[in-house]
Image 1: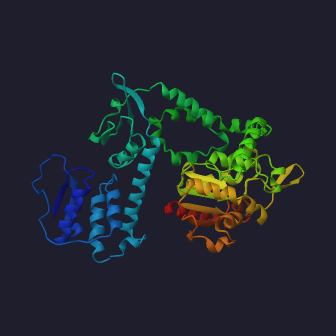
Image 2: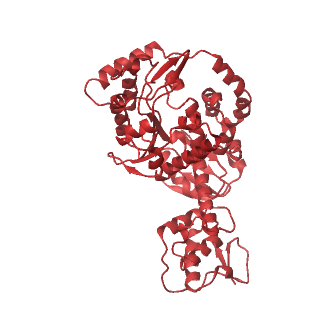
Image 3: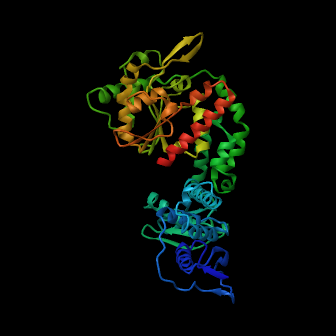
Length: 475
């Protein structure tokens, strides 16, 4: 039996060197105990495995996996990685077997670590402190689910390069002084600064933008687990906002739909005439939105409330292209906010795709419908109408430059791919597009709403979520 002591809980280099030496001496996993040096003496522990000459070749994929798994809080992580290393000698394609218990466990640890890093990026809240006279600094307290602080700190350096900050965690503290990134031992919650004056403004903003009609507690708690609430200033508002969400939603539904301000419509049309229709291509997404609202390239504008351009980050890596705005989108001037949008948001949450990081738009920018009593019923756009809007979609693709474009429904497939495709046969494939983006095809969320059979609807929803997850993996 050999006991290997590593220098720290995240000592990947130490594990790699020890694992290499142990593997070369053919020390089986059952004969090795991995532990972390806590300063205690152990008569049976050895400082390092005996030196051994030779090479062990493993794939870069295994090394990337090991670097992430080491950050997991499981005490069995080092033993699991060495067991995988041991088995790779006789099973070189082991990592391609997702059903294998060891591989499944390692992949699950990797996903948990990646999720912890994502949550750290999303939920760190800095508070301003006075470091020196006339110098501002910012401090945040965070409790990551796994030991991701050192791996995630460079993200904050890139994002806040001109801001001196410290991120305090129970494991390790990261410090950036605008010149160098350093780390110190973990801290105590008492070391975190008290609330600053900006948090009151942030809570006011959060309450004002909270949409009770789109509240889904399960999805919210999945994306923002309760373990992080105590460090989020806005979390104190959540119980009251959720308690009154139903009443606020009923009030909103009872109100008459609001029309866009005529002043904004006139300004958009002027901007469109000046920029979008003078022969020059739009140079910003704002110009695209103005041009869409004033577009007269097909007759659909006559019966629509307004044009609906896309929304999302101007350099999003993922773009979703739907078919056309629906009734609620036409009134709100935003894509995917109606019943189909609710299905879309739920599927994104289940697939682990943050909507805030994607650009969402439609192939046709005005609502095509027919009146049936007081209801406006959706009608499928014709080829001429798709072609009339093609310039706006191409402008959005040119300005956003996404890596992956997901076509939702047959109309979007024709607009993105330039030809019709059978969605059932095209799902799960990657199409290389002319602008070097990769194309993915899936159902439109409204298809799930129209499917009457519960079993078929559940099956289609699972396929839809799988397609969204597949597209996100390409990003």
